[in-house]
Length: 385
Image 1: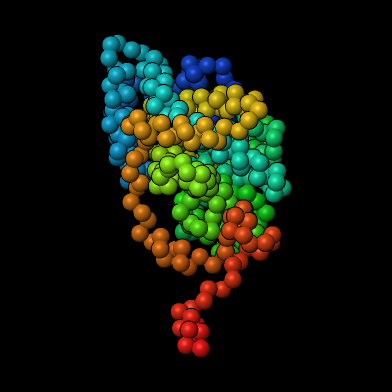
Image 2 (image 1 turned 90 degrees about the vertical axis):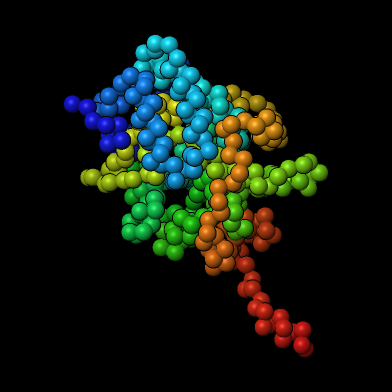
């Protein structure tokens, strides 16, 4: 008996194992075949293209507010309609949509690869294990795997808003062995935490709960928190200082775009723990195949890039600028509305700059708390004196 896609569940380790297995397959056709097998084994029916398209649109509508897909829905619709032209098998339809999806998003590959390479370098420089936040940092896992010989393994960290609200501990998927293992999170005081960005509210919660400390290092793809390092912030600012025209609002646009990329599981990530294993809701077929083929293609790109002898950060940023200039439909040209609580959150941040941001800000090694701020009445008194 089959059940609707949205109610199909699997263990977190199982889904991540599927992702890692698909990265090793020889072709995108093989990835789609493996994805279909996986969904069918978990009770999902692979129906006619028209029905799959309708289910995908329902899926997007349900998640639209959370993942900011409103401005991208038309692109999904056009891709699916183009693939429905003519009589196609479900397999051919899924592969065709996934191929179109990758062509629309592959301009992000250089950015994702170079950012992941920087994270790998930091694990070596700081001698820290690395943890990628699920869900959005899943996009950095394929490049990290391609660079696994260059540093420590990147583990996957599950810490959701529900866990934050209830005080439940984070969960870690250990990726260092052939078989993935889910465990309660160990001490994260000495770790590099990697995510897309922007503010670091989960970082603040982890520190406040004593699960990590101000000694923890944090690297975001893009940051709106002056105490947390943002890779795009640093590189785009360098271009600005070099006299290269750039727009720092692109930091937020890129992060929002990366966060909108398809994942193989439900967004927001809803979890239920059974017998020490976290179960998650699987994406419906179109979303699942687009995600798996994207991750496979990104991994192949990274395998090629790691053979290059020079850094291509500048090339990646130039590619981003060209994509924006060409009015590429997959780029969120307007940042998502700013978080309403952002000002209060930043103004009450009490942990100081976290590594590597404390070095960028000029604080000496080991000093993670900035000097106390001078109050207005103190300044007024000094002026009177």
